[in-house]
Amino acid sequence: MPAAESAFRREFPVKGGDFAKAGAAACAIKELLKDLGIDSATVRRAAIVAYESEMNVIMYAYEARMDLAVTPGEVHITVDDRGPGIADIELAMTEGYSTATAEMRELGFGAGMGLPNIKRNADIFAIDSAVGRGTRLDIIIRTNGHVTT
Amino acid sequence: MIVLKDVLALLDGELLTPTTDPEAAFRTVFASDLMSDVLTSAEPGSLLLTGLANAHVVCTCSVADLTGVVFVQGKRPAPEVVNEARTRNLPLIATKMTMFEACARIAGLVQDGGHARR
Image (cartoon, rainbow over the protein chains, first blue to last red):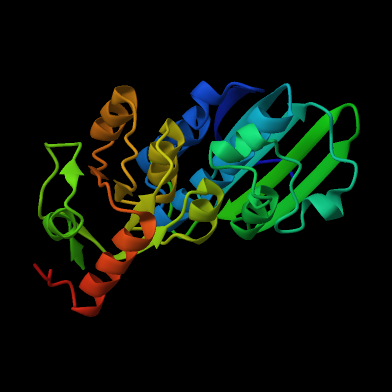
């Protein structure tokens, strides 16, 4: 799902295991979208998608690049991680299924709702994963308002 | 709407962010220790009741547009978490009440149409 050439773009690196910086990319994306004049409901959906994705990378992968592209009609977020990958995507998309550790659950995450919640907040959602290599998420959220800059 | 000063009175709460407007109001209430549940089910403008007291609570509220937090059962976030909440203008309240007691009292407040019983 390539974003339009004219899109506003930003990249955010995310490091696996870095719980101290969890949410940094999602909060930055939220502020950028607000500054761009995107409507608040779309900003919230995009921020939730970004935060759930960021937490998945921090909990399960080694590193990732989160890309944000914004056009007047849509917010496009891609998350490309280097990590163990997902053997059974259908199972991973099942609400409540989780391989989280006790430590992750103590932090308030790992309830098996991350990927389903990303899909729920997306208008278009695609996931591709290779065991031993990593996972790529491709999310498009259509905006209700328009970009002002 | 549920008003912050009424929540403080009902829960015998301590406001950890003293610069917060006591008239700040919340549309509804959500209670959970799981931030995954907050991201999935809480409505924007909600007051969150939780027994979790780490930085992820503040970040989750910011991402999902929740507008206040009550830490139950004597849980207190670290000073850096409180500072982060201040910068985000997110009111934080601490109460010694259990989650059940705090929820029951706020449910009574909601049933009274937002008027605190003292």
